Length: 266
Image (cartoon, rainbow, N blue to C red; front, side):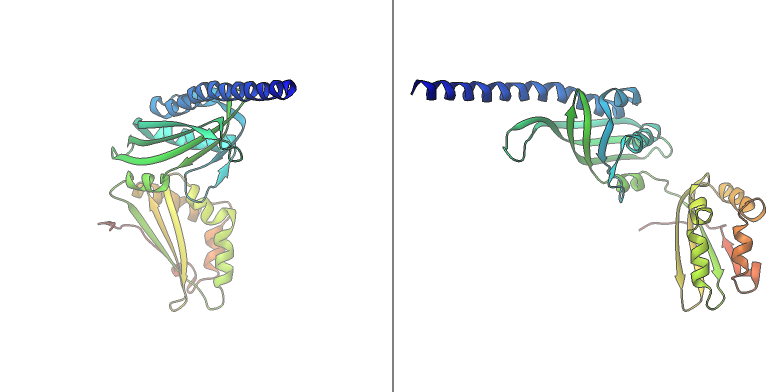
């Protein structure tokens, strides 16, 4: 009986010690997570680098990105810091995370709150609810999950007036697949999207008219004109020349419409 009491005492003391340790870990880890939040409120990326592990795995909030590593997550952080000001994490609710097996606190941290801020380029403001979770190891954040409508936020504070370009390519019969192959090359629409001033690119093919459409959004008309001059006259890949051999009437089969006005979004 004495041995049983001793064993129970050891188990109870051990469990209490672990619980106290997890509580202490939670408080210190919460301070690290708060520094992560302060990165975006202050625009100080050094805070982010101070608390984040090089082995970070981050569930990014941007549509389609999924889980990213340290370098990719840092790029996302840089995007927010460089493009938004007056950022605030409002009404935060901090909670200890739990071990899913034991349902006991494990030192991880969760946070609910409301992000607000302002776009530097447009002056438009945003407000959105969010949820974040953080895991830690050796005093660093090793895992994060960011759950909010980041893509919706970026669109919401974007420019009211967009500079849309529509390029129509009249494709010779039987050449759609070849045109699509060229568009998918690195020197194709990926290069268009990465050109300075291009905000987005979409494309599709209409079988009834045998026309391939490229819909582009640019931050200014002159940016597109710079791109068009480069694509037609300086592009080392000669993509435009390669495309025109697949079009009805050659060069005349490629028509860009870019002096567009009155953009509206509903």
